[in-house]
Image: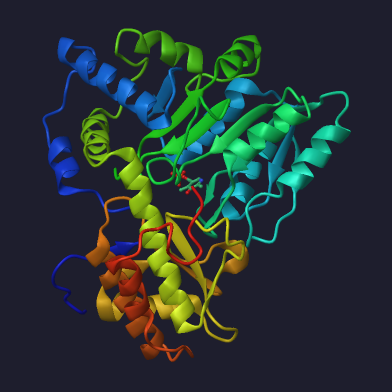
Length: 399
Ligand SMILES: *Cc1c(COP(=O)(O)O)cnc(C)c1O
């Protein structure tokens, strides 16, 4: 077995690297979750998450993975037979649809090629055709982590308003929150879904729903079965800073510290940093003569870059070589793009030199795996990092 020294490079787009400060904040004795000290933590994280989601509405925090928060969004607002419009942006859209189908929702799934954001023009056509307003929700994945394509939630809101359709707008921003600009209230999102282990720099284990007044009203009227995920009960307990069941106490301690770090840097700066790293990564990929999975210049994700290998070259074999030689984990291609794509995460707790190390590992790995490419990717990325800001960089990523 090879012994590796120094830190492992975890460059997958989630779970992401956890800052030492956050690890230290969680390294605390267990807290009585019904005792007087807990409420202070409860109130602090609930308020912190309102600031991160940019909402004055309640945020529900679950001890769950992102998948739980997906399920919560659906079981609170929808019941079997309800029609929902979803868009095939990639594997995470496919998985969310799977949940909807298990709950016997009637899913209208707009096909996609996994190289663009959601087909919003088609969403608009289907909403216009839905004269009787049978569609109860439109669901989009903000940052499609399997491909590195972004769908702008505000554009989805604008089109719902334009066609005067009352469907709820649900957005999976599990890998968007804390790395891409997000405005739950200003963008008129009804349910936002997030998780702890991507831009929020925490270990996996917390799921979030931010909700609109309209979504809450729909949930109150919804007779569909649910218990653990029920918003009403959680919100009622949250008024006292507590939770109806045992919360993930130490993860909440980590969350308080992680949001503190995001706010010390300034959310605007956090978003600009992600865009800059994404632009530098694309400069490297272009220099290598490889293709990004995302082909829409306006949809490149600030959080990760899906990278294609030429036909006949297995991306998982390349990833294996990089892991063995350089102790770096890169994201695997999922489902349809397995073996064709690897993903470079530049999300969360990250800086310029970590990006340089990451890209150097990729460039050396391409050589060792005998993938045809040109050299100079690392140098091209350095040029972006040295002077240019994200706005001047080639193909500036979208917000
Ligand atoms: C990670 C991720 C999920 C799934 O979250 P889990 O915590 O693995 O359940 C869903 N959607 C997106 C966009 C993600 O990035």
